[in-house]
Image (cartoon, rainbow, N blue to C red; front, side, top):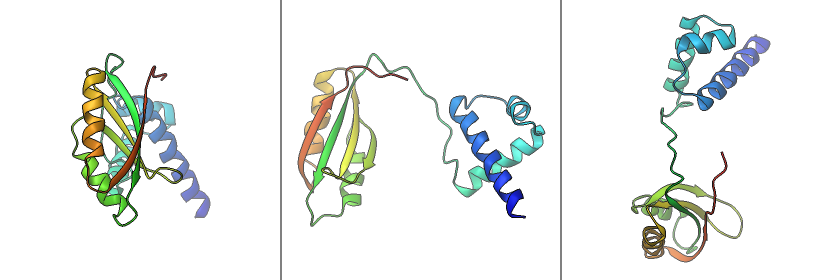
Length: 144
């Protein structure tokens, strides 16, 4: 029974890897690559979605024309980091937020049409209640 569960988990991980590489792949194509039936793939995707392992399907766009930055944020110890992260999420231009361990509490990916827009987003992050310090690095090139 344990071996079957491990095999099933491994198949799910392979399926997730294929979906990460191309979320538009048809169930038939995925089934062929995994040596499964189309209905088995459909059922696995449904189960992964229902369990929360797959949270959403999205697209990856070519945004190389946009300006980007990584902003590291220090949070006031008296304010919960999660609370500050949620406030930062509401700032226009924030692409992603990561709570981190180490010198900084939060890493924020910022995107804008140009450096002026990125700078405005960083300024708005600095105004968020609970933020005590930021350190921003502009992204020069994205390698995918």
